[in-house]
Image (cartoon, rainbow, N blue to C red; front, side, top):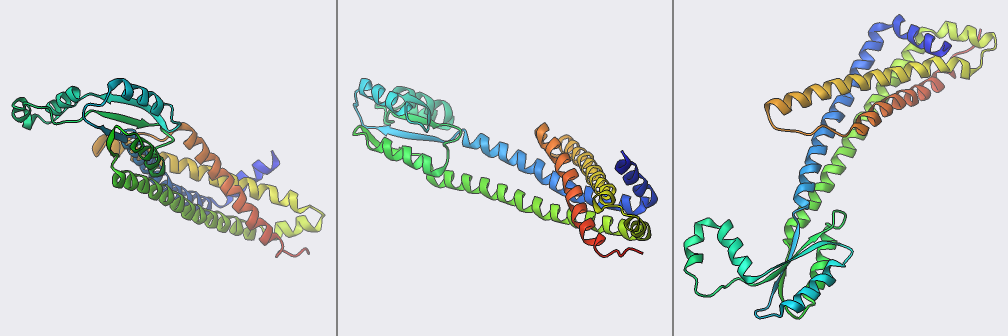
Length: 287
């Protein structure tokens, strides 16, 4: 309790410095929050696109449907495969005429159905990487009755590359602004120590341990980080609501992200204060 009271008292003694530190940290983490919301929505969009990744195996003319059914059941047992759907020649023509309405007259005038039967394979959520798709496509191509296998390799590669770029960008930006927040909190704590330099020297003279002296500053760093995180959360929520209402629909980040962000901001403040206190206390001589 003493540490908390002294930390609050220290922040009240220098309200301008504390306010600037909280504001600077809040703005830094606000940028991280915005990137988090954007990254979360991009990831959801890419996940939706990934869910439509299909491998299509076109079958030879006149293949035995019973044989295809047995092969489909075997393919469905692959660890990467979620489902296998058999599309007959008739159904393929029906789908084409329904989806390509501009060619409806052409389809209705056909005397022979030119479209092949096919097996449409969907992959599991955790098995939609280019390597997984290529592996399943290669195994499908090994069946004698399969004429051709397609899965849009270039599109799958590009989609997976975008996901990695987004994830790496979020990590890099978050680390950069976290470093900036650490420096800001460290500067604030150092200035607070300098302002109370004589009092700390007296405490050292009468035998106070460094741990005893350090606690209020650590609490102050924790409060600064937590308040900065709360400010960043309010700013991010306001930006999210504004963009969602005026520009494009967005999805808010998971609740545990918010909790982890506030906890991370508090720990960040305390750890940066720990480093600053350790360095500055060594410079203060006793009377």
